Length: 322
Ligand code: C5P
Image (cartoon, rainbow, N blue to C red; front, side, top):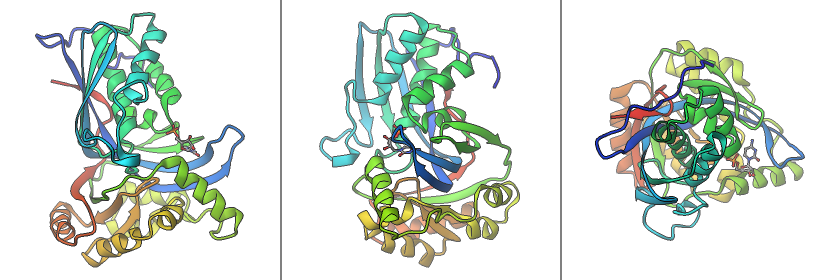
């Protein structure tokens, strides 16, 4: 990890605003181990950052305030509704960075969301990572990447990856990362459902299914090695053969219509399809960018998803924009 500052001061726009953006992720492999005494599960996961970004813009303020625009800004969508107070991870990121740096938590925080909430795409984690980078610049805290990564891990298991981006192997509760060099571009179509799923609920359902002997331990059987090898060199058929997610079975149990959504993706020509993270987003692997555009068009007409997005990865993690 380099000691360079993530943003540093001096990038302020005329009105004092600073923006950073961070990507959505998909778990190309998600192996879930046992439940730990701290309430988290031991994970073996391969993260891929994809080209769907949220932007966080921060400007000088008196105390903290937060506004939300885009995806999830309409009220009352169950697990998908995004708080605009201390319950929002961006607010918590601001308080944590201020405490770390010994500065007053003064800022207006604006989130422009494209990543749907409670979708298994780490949208809230992306927002938190973008907020850390933007506020570091606004407040001139000169936090190192190492500092920001430590703060990110305090905020949530996926936040360090939102900061890092690219491709990474995640262990521990998902926050311990080893970057993976994968220069090849991967094209995917994300099929986003209308209603979000709560991550703790999906983990609990997996525990219940395992306790009842309903799923074998480690349904994502391929392990991370073949997934990383396939991600590095391709072809898409090789990656398609080793995709796996232990949270898919419980997500399907909680949301049976996901089975039809997965079938719709493969029927429409996807190389393979899996539930992204804790769901309910379906990530469908395409042969190349042209195939992804065609697949997205087909799936948009299939009537099983609220929104369909063609994306590619790997892309960079949280960084300043503008
Ligand atoms: O770390 P994060 O706040 O995103 O985790 C949300 C919830 O997801 C946790 O409270 C826990 O219930 C579940 N989780 C888990 N094991 C992990 C990561 C998350 O059980 N490795």
